Length: 478
Image (cartoon, rainbow, N blue to C red; front, side, top):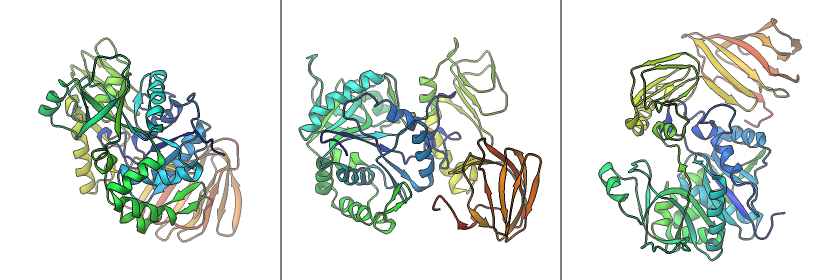
């Protein structure tokens, strides 16, 4: 049972992070990555963990798209958090509809909780200072204000929106300021001018507001958003641990941000500063800024060797990168794409991704490693009529019972013990053993062991894409 005085985090996890391609792609966006590498938590996991210790904080409501539902669930399980709800958007409609849906869901848990609305992909340096800002925001949100959190600019960024407050006094006791206006992401000339104004803050995209207040403001200023979101919510369906919105109703909802929909119009907006380092991790330059650097201001990750190089960020997922005589560069080498860019041009990467998508170049959308609820697969090599994959199945998990119309498959076990179903046969395969699945034959792979199962799959056929899967039974409801 949710407490009467409760704060429900609403984590918006629908972004694709195109500005930090090729690491972040639609199949596995930046919020699911550990940007600083190593064994650190992902950005999504950090978003919730930095709230732990706040009084009356509840488990989160998370909004994501359907493709990422199992990633969200697994990453929350890894940090031992059971979300109040994981709500699936059939397609992205920006932040105003997502927040509307979350507020409707939150009221089902509590008559009128405070919502703490967070993006899933931010880095915030000092948890204790951030929590002080949140505690300060409780007082204002309880009074019916819409609290937005701002960050004092340290540079003229063009990748952030800005918020201007009414005149700030020199009183140290002053902890909140009325909002005068919102400024969309500026060009460089305007950004240079904005940061000279002491009443200007970066817009963090973090909000705190009572559920009833934000719903009233959305209904007042954006009646279509309210109407179609309410319809999509009322007609939602349950899918395992997920809430699936009604697609037809949601499709009618305007695509609009909460800033444009409400914050630029309301007279309830109050800004509270976040007095610690904050970044939306919106570009490779911002990742360089938050990374540990060597004596030459280089940040490196992975297999990298440098000589006479400075002010650069280099990251390798596998191969050795050797840099000689470089300055101010971004070099990102993944398994299937290499990015080399001037650090000051990193905001332009999103336009390259757009071009890749328009030209149906698959590297713009997906990685070679694709995550599934049962594990993942990695494309090792392929040609027009064959493909080789490494498939990893987590202990206790299984693929769907399925068949293919256009391809046959060979499975070779390289690690673990597999239970295999082919047609009407069931049998066990161990390391170095193999089997053949003819085209059109029902088959399933299961791992009932206690260790990871790894197999090499060799596909042969006239068509090898993932939509050549006819699922007959699936424990994940796909």
